[in-house]
Length: 212
Image 1 (cartoon, rainbow, N blue to C red):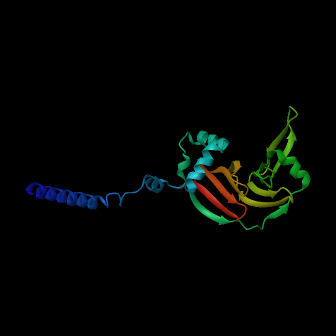
Image 2 (image 1 turned 30 degrees about the vertical axis):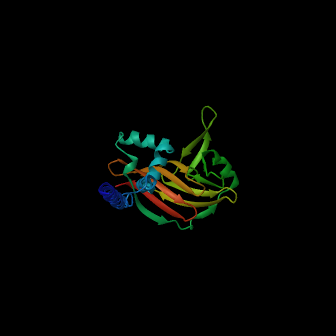
Image 3 (image 1 turned 45 degrees about the vertical axis):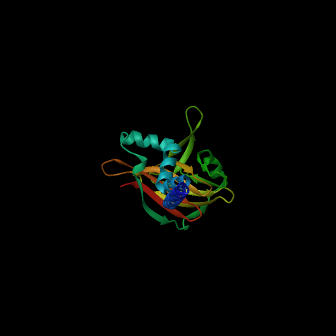
């Protein structure tokens, strides 16, 4: 009878211990993040600067090579900052003549859907035959201009105009309505300051990205 009583006490104590143990561990995992939640919290979306840096290094090859050569490799695309955002008023518009459009067509940069082109060359420039019989593009005006032309209607909208201290080197479309125009500006000491202009044909916003 005494052995049965002791066994019952041991059993009761064991059950109580297990209950306390389970109660104590009940909140063990309550405050833990699941791996997927933890991983998601660490993922950061690319910023506008990240996107611009990637496009500059992967698609604006000619511009990047020119900048590296002019700055002796001292320039890094991660130093670009968005300095201004302007709304381009569609006041300076014209219709490009069909013959002139065809004449400069090889130098235009088409949007992915081929509905628009970037014209960086026709302003103040002219074409002539070189010694080897090939057509040569020769600049005339010291000022520079960039325009967007509607391929179907030939409506031409100026989005950028600058003096001779500004150089336009390259343009690339990010999508059907966003274009990057890459160049630079020379200061009084003839030092180059790289610049990328980002223009949206829908919002008419022109962003200036340059080094501070």
